Image (cartoon, rainbow, N blue to C red; front, side):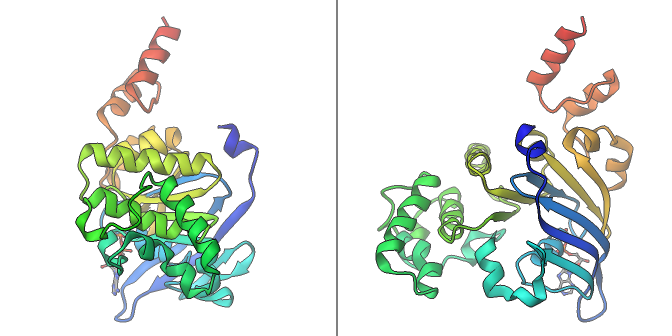
Length: 274
Ligand code: ADP
């Protein structure tokens, strides 16, 4: 994809990162990876493989036990959570854990008010953020009167209002029905196309297949596989080792000797090879 090839600027650099929780659980072990400006990265892995622990290092919710994490060249520990929060937006797995207000407007304005942003600028930024998530006109609604999919979008808007360079979404489709999942991912895709760097933590293979540029597979606290979606999906045996199963269409195409990401692509490839 030209978007990626034309821009290899590294925003997040992880070097030899290990993390041990109090009590002695080694949740990450010698992790290395770069996140590039403008890319759509998926972090894949079964429960307990270390995905959430990894991304919490990107915005200062956790710091390395050993090794380093740099954002725009600076160690996260030195930047601190407040500064990191302005670069790296984090949407929690459960939106209800980050919604505090009884009005959508106040919820989206919350972080900006903490930073003493002038009210006129807040107004503009809230309007822009609500437009980005298709919730214009919901300013006065109570977030808890909305559907889960809408609350998830309120949570995304709250993070977007801070204008972060990188948006991390932790399991953004959990608890949503299929059409809500779709509209959530279409929203994330639009944000990516308009310049946001996206990191999605997930165990959903179809989501990765359809939306990501690049994927990192975690297993037992280590990076087990990484590469383009096509590269990683062609390694079915290793994926199975990491307790992951590619979508059926991908497995089928692997048998045919091409790795495709969708039915449309399979039709296209088989026509070309006829
Ligand atoms: P994932 O996001 O892939 O499900 P996590 O990063 O949540 O994985 O967890 C990785 C490992 O760290 C697991 O063994 C988990 O039990 C452990 N862990 C996660 N959070 C804590 C914590 N606060 N204290 C102790 N151990 C934890």
